[in-house]
Image (cartoon, rainbow, N blue to C red; front, side, top):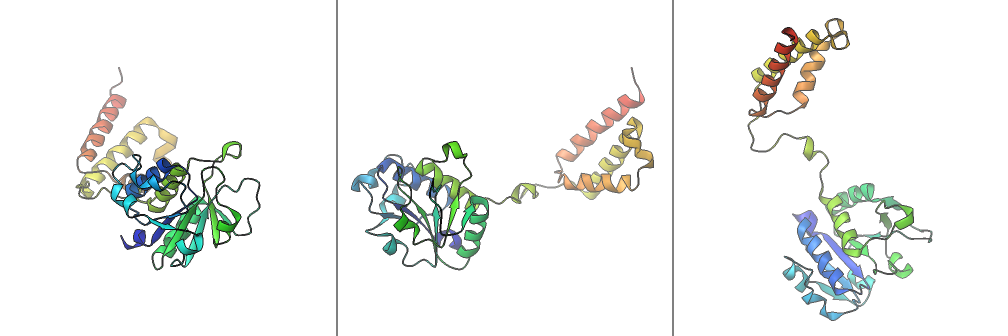
Length: 241
């Protein structure tokens, strides 16, 4: 995806090669492949065993002596930081909003996402290259995260689609209108039989029930199962004991 290709993940002053490998693995998991390192502590990072499945990504990682060089081709630079006791001079956004803004920028132009060293985070000099900052909403008593975990959380937020879970499953036959209407009618009968919230006199009760059933996005396989359940409940209501 072109949008993913426009993101440069930049690790600044990383000291543990295993963290670099694990960050590369997280990048590969979520489909980001442009890893850049600024003055990494150990040149042996390219052999990090923690880069499971991301060995090629790690071999292709670019190394720069400074942050300026690592972000020279980026029109947006965002720093991931908890800041600690420091007061930011740039806007500080929670990850959810920051990821949304970053996705929007990546649709057209390259950007860099900076992560600092495991011990000290991003230095003031590194932060000075950032237009704005994002923070993962960890609790104040323990806000520092493992570097690779922070990379994974940020990249997940970049690729996740909150609306995807509410969409019908792709390639799965959905329930027909007739099947949903049978289910709606049975559900209305059951609610009336049970005396649920004076269902018989409720305004637009049937329409509300119909809309509710449609919002369930039932598949062609599931709709008859739910219909059978309601039939059984309705039979029990009408034949107690």
